[in-house]
Length: 449
Image 1 (tube, rainbow, N blue to C red):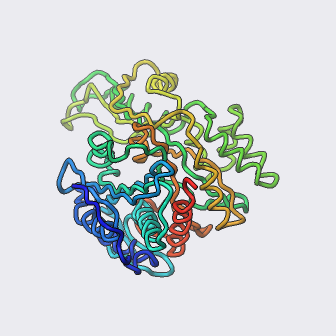
Image 2: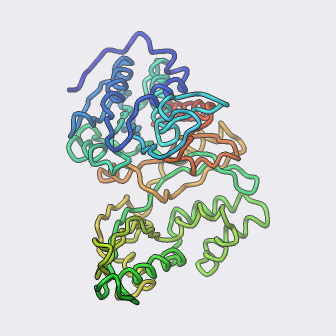
Image 3: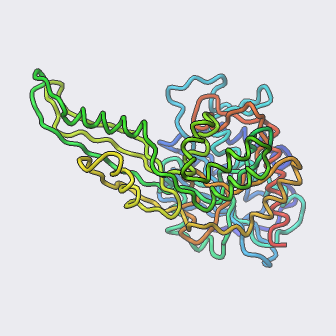
């Protein structure tokens, strides 16, 4: 149920002045998905926000996988602003950690734990920023809605989708949201950038099937289904799909090139020329990996199936494909691009497709977010970013909500943090949590004014 409570006389100082401690407490909840089990974490967060005077409501399709929607009342002169984040985390199975993944240890200047990057740090930043707003006694221009969600790592069916499909009234009037995943510092050719996520690629999972003659395993078989599957996998490994320069990557790369010296600037700008893109990606090597999926539809082979008995040559082999589409493209376009690579003998079936929002995002809040970051880092440049992966933003987009991936983190140049997400020893600098909390707090104070 919803609770309307009076404004509190005080806020837990440790949590609003020390967001690292809030993050540590969040990391100590084992919310590995599957199975999730986010209830204890959500219950604790509800107590924190309700104690700070926010109205709270818990909604769930599964009692052990709840979602919290909390509201801080504003002056009503601006539309509500949504802060959304998930508390479930990916598995640590088979990984070796320096510090136990659910201990929330602070060591060597870093906070260690599963979810330290994805995305309990973001939840800690957002919640701490709201608590600071309450502690300061200043009402925001519009209501601030905090949605803490389950199940994002498995697609959001028990999380954001429950809120959007069954309880859309809780988000009435919301046009903009802050969520994962952007505003982390990125160094290129000696310059520092903060890419703010404004769009993301679309999910398009497929299954490819190849067929061939069956037979006894004792007899040589040439050109059978498994051999054809091997050729398919080799093609996907060695070939890129066609280059496409869409709206957000163009703005991102133009913004980066404008800040770089020669010879780096012409290389980055050259990525926008489809005749040069793939050659320049090869020249860039490891740094080019970040730009590659922003300029192509992509497909990765993930699950391979063939045969049931060791002594029977199978007549059919399949591979599940994780496809990701650029804005403006649909499954038919991806199938056509694949067909040009793999030929007509491969059967292609779409298993799941989810659009991720409009082709061109609403950038109304981009200026405010950029101003806040520039004030905290005069040497940083903000650029809009297309995320190669997916987040709950695509689900909130069904209600016309534009999400900005804005979890600001100033990171050491040597930290390859994207490689730490879902990996062993996931961690981030303690100072990055404070940096992000300060930035989000500034946005909440200025939003709508």
